[in-house]
Amino acid sequence: MKKQAIFAALIAGLALAGCGGGGSDSGNSSTSATTGGSTSTTTGNTGNGVTGPSTITLATSTVVDPVTSVPAAQYASTLEEASIFKALNDLRGAMGVGLLQQSLKLDIAAGNHDFFFVKNELYKDATYLRSSFNGILGPHYENPALFGFTGEAPADRARYAQYTGSISENVTVNTPAGECTKNLFNSVYHLISLVNWYREVGISVTPGKTCVIVLGHDAANEMKPQLPKAGSVSVTPSAGQTGVETTFFNQLEVPTPAADIGVGTGVGRPVLVNLYSQGAETLAPTEVGVISYTITRVSDGAAVDARILTAPGVLSMGAKLTSDEHINGFGNIVLLPTSPLDAATTYKVTFVGSVKQNPVGKTWTFTTK
Image (cartoon, rainbow, N blue to C red):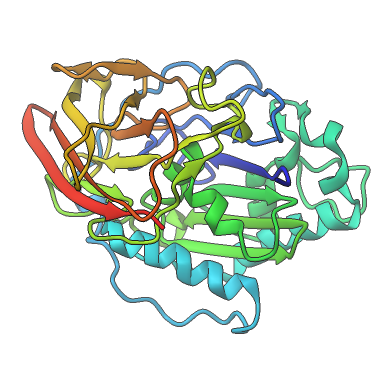
């Protein structure tokens, strides 16, 4: 199996400095990555270790209902950018968290970084990819001395492209052509970053070398974030979804979720519950509780062994929780099967919890490929 790399940086605060988002709860920026088994750390804006996110309460009027229709993207149908745009909106649409529209400015930011990495052949440079520069992980850093430089950090490159707002950058390196979204969707930290309350996206791909996806929320132009109605529980894999991957090679995501398991074999496809909604735009850890979160095989009712990963401080109301400092947002709850799922099998997931002392829950099924 060819090792593949995935990198994600969440950059909040171009125009919304210190303002939390649906799934962020803070203005800190964080970086996570897959580097083919190497280790890395998550850092904040200053390069020091990330501290616990702050809680900021926003009025419901600051968000809008999930967008259900966007203009057709201008990517040529034969390009991978077009398939990524469709796959990302299919995922978000099925979750009910709203569609993204194409942003030419974010396309420029993504394209500039894609060009920089390919021109300087940095996708081949394991040392560069696994290093951190001024608190910025290598795949998101641009060395000013190299050709094509447009900004050291993702936020700088967005500014260079004249984009104002909050952004989230995801990068895959050395991923086979056509498999960018397959890898990003079948992850923990990167999946969370792709289903935040953003409104726009820019994409650039050099097949087999780099794939850059930049999501954004253009607050400077009064673009409001999007969130589902109050009390909603958004999930992926979604209800009734088929063709779900059986295996997640967690050791290739850095920081590595559940690093003590899955060595050489992988674990099961992560299941994400997103509890952010109107009225719960940001959440304190004590405002989220988990009573139970289980996965069973429908054919015989057999329980699947799984871990529940949450941001530190989320309340256990009966469920056994595993605290994960790299989970971005107290309202993102991940169920991680400890071994690969069975092929061509239907599974039932049940989540029961609370948000701001109000009961929430959802039961649904999905089927593996």
